[in-house]
Length: 315
Image (tube, rainbow, N blue to C red; front, side, top):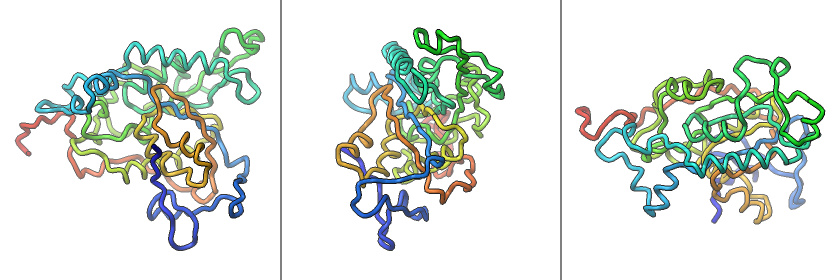
């Protein structure tokens, strides 16, 4: 089952990625089946869903998501709040690391990345660490950072320096928030202490100001996903990994693919499995390249319930 969030424009016959986003486009000559983009406006993005977490196991065993509700207690006190990886999840991450070490990319015999963008939730940080290893310290240039190519590769035999990528944490690519305790996050001060050398400098709030008992709307999550693409498009790196979540990816990819062959559309939009790698080419049409991307801020439509119990006196 595919999910299509794409809406057609009734004016020019083009397509819109979001309602009222003023971004219309058409792909190639009518019915050509092809698209042409300027190479300098493209970059490869490898989206990775986090590996198996304890919340995935809990919902599978119970057959429902009720086990992810906070109940009478505060969300932060729930055992599955900001859920961690299972041992199976850690092994899935290690397996993906091995796969990337043998996957040719560009001129190399393995897949290397210029940047790894990570959701601030614990399970995505753990996945990134196990897949990509220790990141390059924030502020350290690549030419001053020593790194090794995967063992057994020609690059390793030649002693070629392969600096590790930076890990940049962004709130925009976190999971669709609200209602389920696994989708809230700990304070950044707690997470940053556990994951040194991750760059949290672009996170605005220490506390999770987005989580509440209300689920983030489909429209807002779709809008946030396209906003994340706009931010990615402005990055100078050409090969980027994004470690994120299944519902976020569903809301992102569901807005694209209407002009694709049905098999390709299905492969793009289907639900991502744990630690699944899905690689795409991000192609800019040049109409939003200079747009300012403001930090993600809460709407305050619903107060955070991370540390609020059902017996809160203000309810």
